[in-house]
Amino acid sequence: MGNPLLISGAVLSAVAALLHIGCMVFGASWYRFFGAGEQMAQLAAAGSWRPTFITSGIVLVLAIWSLYAFSGAGLIPRLPFVRLALCVIAGIYLLRGVVGLAFASFAPGGNGPAFWWWSSAICLTIGVVHFVGAWQAWPQLSQAAA
Image 1 (cartoon, rainbow, N blue to C red):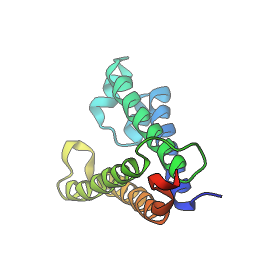
Image 2 (image 1 turned 90 degrees about the horizontal axis):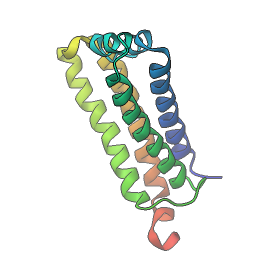
Image 3 (image 1 turned 60 degrees about the vertical axis):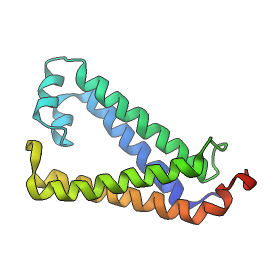
């Protein structure tokens, strides 16, 4: 059946990737709504390639993270370095969440404190889901279990 937390983490990363695709498809209003900043929104509205390029990179990373969580859950074939990858993924989500909370106090970049609080809470949640899921599945993720 797979590890429910790793499955949840995979779905959450996939949803995040899809929302980023939505920004590329629907443009400036989505970039603004999701807090990418006015500069990204203006670049998207002007038809610049930069927001699409940057957002495509984020989509690629989130999609790979989703695949690693699905792999760790046992729903797709085992990917290389799955233990390490899940630790790094959880660590990045958690670090982004904690650093974002610090930014919320200063509201840099014009995004405002609400963006930093919400995005940090989301990242912390996804990070905890990945961390606990990987911890639960750790014995099955060993090389001997492969």
